[in-house]
Structure formats: C-alpha cells, structure tokens
Length: 262
Image (cartoon, rainbow, N blue to C red; front, side):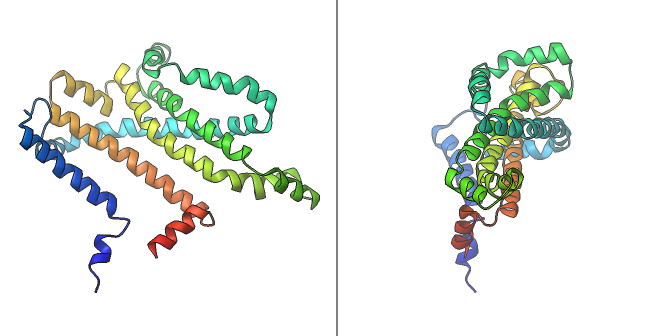
C-alpha cells in the first residue's frame, strides 16, 4: 500500500498549504511577540469560531443569499449582454465603453444610495454583489464568443448549418471555457459585493459582524468572520469548477487534469 500517494495527491495540496500558512502565522506571532490586540493567534480565532458558531452561522445565511442573488443576476444579465456586444460592432461601440466607465466608480461610494433607494434588507446587498460580479462575466463572455475562428463558421455555413445550429454546435461550446472563467471570478467578487452592501446599511450578515467586531476591537471574532467569508468564496468557486468539468469533459484543461491525476 502506497501511503505517499494520498498524502501528495492534488486534492490535498491546498489543505497542506493552509496548514503551512497557519503554522507560519503562529510562528510569526511568537517570534516577533505581536500583541493579540494587533493580530490574534490561530488558537484564539479557532476558539472564537467554535464559541460563536451559532451566531456566525445565523449571520452567514444573509451574506450567502445576497452573494447567490448577485451572482445569479450577473450570469443572467451579463451573458446575454455580452452576446449582444460580441455579435454587433455597433452595440460594442456604444455599450462596452459605458460598462468600462461604470467599473471605475467605487462601489463603496454608491452603495449608500442603494440603501436610500431600496431601504434596508436584502435588495441593496444583492445589487452591490451584482455590480461587482457583472463586469468579469461580460468581459470573459465577449472574449469567448469573439475568439471563434471565422473559417470554422464559414465551413459550417457551407455545409448548410443554420444560425441556431452554428450557435449551439460551434459558438457556444467554443465560448464556454471563457464564460466559466468569468463566472468563477464573478462569484468570488459577489462575496465582496455582499459584504460591501452590509457595511453601508445592514443589521445582519457577516459584514455587520465585521463592523461590530471592529467597533469593540474583538479581533478573534473579526478573523473568524473573515475565515467564513473565505470559505464561502472557495466553496462557491469549487461548485462552479465541478459544474464546468461536468459540462465540458472534452475541454483540454479537463483532459490535462485527468492525465495529471492518473
């Protein structure tokens, strides 16, 4: 029985990296004698995470709902707009610069307006998550659809394929890797957007916990909330990774992963 292979398997490598970072974190605090009011040690963060878990789980759900809502809007609105831009140079010349301009506006600066317009609750957080996750989806999807070779489309047309069949058989499969790349970036930014929305106007969620912990200088609680936020982003990213592998087992990146695993 080879015990070395499970230990060094690709699936466990991120776990070993996390363990190494935690050890380095603890060693750094001990060597430089950093006081706990500046950086808490890993044990105090873990203790606070266990002690406050019921409250943290309760506050995690609003953040998760806002993240999923904003991400869903980013995908449902961003992909059709990106297709519209990719298929029309006129639309691209009008809409694309406007989208780039909208991304230069700090979301923290305009997030209070959402509270004024929509009140406290889930809607402002969903909009903030949507605004942060929308642009990567559009950029990646436009790049994916515009990267289809013209010769391939001409060959399909010469063989009698109609526009719908060309889209389903050539354009969409060719663009899907780029679309999923944008979606994976978008879902992590949606977590940030949800927290931004909670910072400016909310009485629930992990962003609210961070604000409350910051006001009382409860650094272990703050770090515990940050750990949960990181885990939300990682889990959602991995879910999209699994969906991508399920939908695109034919893609070169998936074949390379399978070969490396074998």
